[in-house]
Amino acid sequence: MNRLAPNPLYDQWLAVAAARSGELAVRELANGREWSFAALRDVAHVAPRSPAVLHASTRGFGLVVDVLRAWRDGAVLAPDDGSGMVPPPQAALRHELCHLKVTSGSTGVPRWVAFRADQLAADAAQIVATMGLRVEWPNLGVVSMAHSYGFSSLVLPLLLHGVPLWLLDNPLPENLRGVLTTDHPLTLPAVPALWQAWHRVGLDFTPIRLAISAGAPLPVALESAVFDRCGLKIHNFYGSSECGGIAYDRTASPREQATLAGTPMTGMTVTLDPASGCLRIHSAAVAEGYVNTDPTTPDAAESPGNGTWLSQDLARLEDHGAVHLLGRAGDHISVAGHKISPAVIEDILLRIPGVGGCVVFGVPSPNAVRVEELVACVKLEPGTELNTLKNALGDLPSTYVPRHWWLCDALQPDVRGKVPRGRWRQQWLEQQAES
Image (cartoon, rainbow, N blue to C red; front, side, top):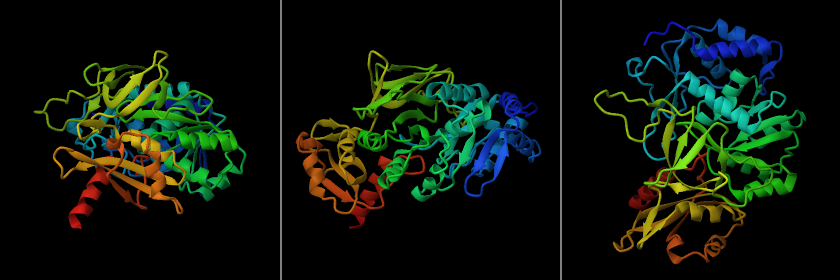
């Protein structure tokens, strides 16, 4: 895998830098440092040469420079997302690859997924076209750019489409409040947990022209509450490491159904797999495949490639194209002969004022006939009574009512905005074993 020529994305970046030369490219809000597109081009031009596989542990502006270093030198970039995943050896990577992402591990062990330059460019183009990103509305960077969401929504629009980036290292409400007093129109991609924290303290979102939420399903109660308070529509964005953006809620008013993810991204089509009921994605942005470090092992059947990928998301498609997510394959819990989706219970609980987070999972039942029992792990704000939660489930069949309630103040999303069901299930089982 000889690295002799720059990545084609580097030429696209140089064209953007030339066209926007003296305009602001990146601003670090914590210290006020700024770089124009020309200055960013010059910094990247003199940066140290990259190894063939650049495992970038930098953050913020440093990661932007590392991206350009890798593109300049024709290297493969593998951002360090904090998961501890070690990049595969150079010999395991095909010549045309340029970027590696770590999957979230929602349905198993995290894996490296590999991309060509044209696939990254397609994802960026679909995001800019679908969301209507504008150079007049800088992206406010509050999510990790080492993960797929932040990389595709912040880094690629900056470097390939000239959308400026304002970096806010710590998105605590008091820090964001200071940024919002500038009255400069902004685009703010975030995750539900951040939107919840900002809404709880009543931040004035007036400068936000475009609000986006991804990483985890956006609760409709939160979406409606923000809209009712200040008129800001938070657009739900659904994507995956394997293919970038999948669906986006383009509507101007809050959704009424929590299952609604949005409509497919511009340039993408989705279908349902008849055998599994899972969503299949067809797009030029689909990854080349998972990295297989064992040449004697064939690629998995569900591996992305050839412009298509079968997700593990159970879905329903409306005639006009809207995508409804119905849970994850394998997440269904077997209780007394009934297959129960934990997402149904979680959606009801998250609508209740005072519920700061929840995750529902199944554990083995001592009664073999029941097979499993439901556990609801919830984080409650002071003054919220557990009976309020139990009463909210009163209209559901008895099999949907959790047998165990775990009040846990430590419950919070991970850096991707997700609440990993398997991880909390394991913690609950370990606590039960100890007691």
